[in-house]
Image (cartoon, rainbow, N blue to C red; front, side, top):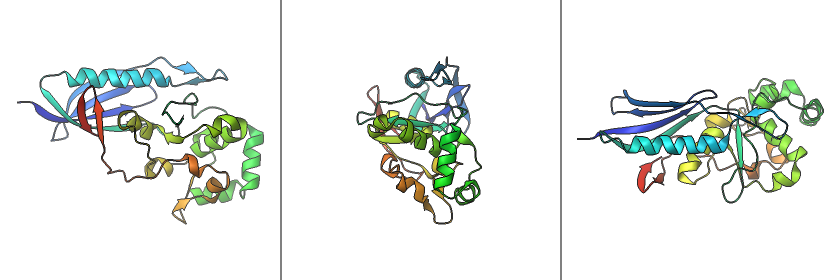
Length: 226
């Protein structure tokens, strides 16, 4: 009799893992990969999105052939402060820019001068001033440095939600990603900060879905709750 399990992708900066958990939350299978990084247009090191996608697909395909397990569902854990900008066909428009990428000082000053200063923004969004680690600043930078590319964005997804999108084809935002030092969320008003709407970024962000939401996915002819 096959053991019912849930597959969990744990995508870290260094290690990419697939776990199978049984009904007692015990790990019954684990596969780890370390992928070769690539570079963005500035020569800065970043994640290889194509390599990551193929690695995940291959790992799940391999796990699904194991006779002793019956994979019922898939879930995802991915590192934060990283955005994937997809077009209307769901294809990434840019590299997955590294959250340690240096942020232009002139653009930094323009943003905080326009929207009330570092102390105010930091307090309202519960975000230290971290440059590219404030993922909202990455989208702000893209809009101002590459406006034509910005126009082509259908959705901007944080990495964990992009991982889910790869399997379901459904684009959502999650409050955990939005609220984690992004500069996007006003915690007092419990809504996106006004600068997000003022800059026209709100239309690029996928609808917010509860973290407990479950959607069907079809992979290699097999259906999974995701």
